[in-house]
Image (cartoon, rainbow, N blue to C red; front, side, top):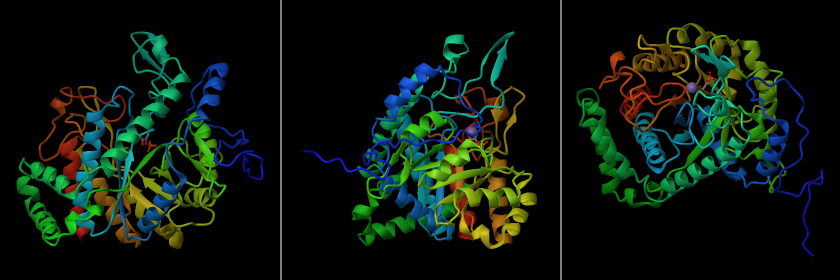
Length: 454
Ligand code: PEP
Ligand code: MN
């Protein structure tokens, strides 16, 4: 007879627990057909976890190092992944970009870089309006490929729960390839370094040559001493992250860990709650408070001491190292005014979490050509303001969270090889927010490495 061990609630260990999620207000949720949704949820809750709880635990340990100022995290990827863009070359080039940035940051920081892809689940978007009107026709807003299609037709814009399953499979395929790349030799330090040399041979040469030369010497030293042959140089730890937005995707992915009996959101290693859904008494904060994963909460310029402390009490009452990350997105013009005061007002409590800078979401504007864009210079300026704020408050600047792609798009303006406002139409591919292209991403890494060196 096969014995199935059960937990106290009678749930077979390792299976989907039946949780009575409290009925709390949840912003930004799709309106699905209930019968169709029920069928999908029954299926999704039987699918295998996308990540192992032990990996999420390891990331929590890594984030504990970040909160202690002994590591720095790089989180990057698309604003919104699309199903059509889940292709080998796209995934490869995004991973390549993040690895290239990480090498430069490792050199600048002299600390481990905790690498996190904003990918393998980032298929849903909060929107400022539920609907969109074009030429007198009003349809539901695009909410990300997990919910509906971008094409402006009634059929495409319908909220279709089957898309939850497609997002799961796309995330699974993405993670599979990411795991292959990061453990199969692609991430070898020497290859990543060789790719970075290509960047420096371009217009970035004059500006970044000195640091590039120093990194080159450091890598040559590792090679000469035989360390570069070590297995550790051929593989990297790489984690996945996305916004836990659509609760009908996240909840069925929650599993009870067979080792500890605790609940994990197995859709990703790290999930965060966005600026628009972080209501203290809402369903999203309640959701992340119940899972063991390391989690993030975005903070915009309106976040005050009281809100931040209440978020900490809800999500991380034990003040467990590595558990909670605040991702601040204040805007380049605002960060120096609000962040030092917020950090200082928190006193010792500010040392119990990790602080990461999202220099993208507070710096978006519309170009004369009608494109949603950001200036590279504003992105850099917000990161500078973030470092200055932490220096002032005596807290650790723990990392950056950026929207980027490995492709040569023209979505953000500026950079050493500049994209001009007039260029935006050339290769503007994002369906949501503008991303740094490959060159701009690497340049950001060099600039942030300089900040870390100080
Ligand atoms: C995002 O990260 O794409 C996003 C919507 O950010 P925020 O919650 O900070 O607005
Ligand atoms: Mn975005």
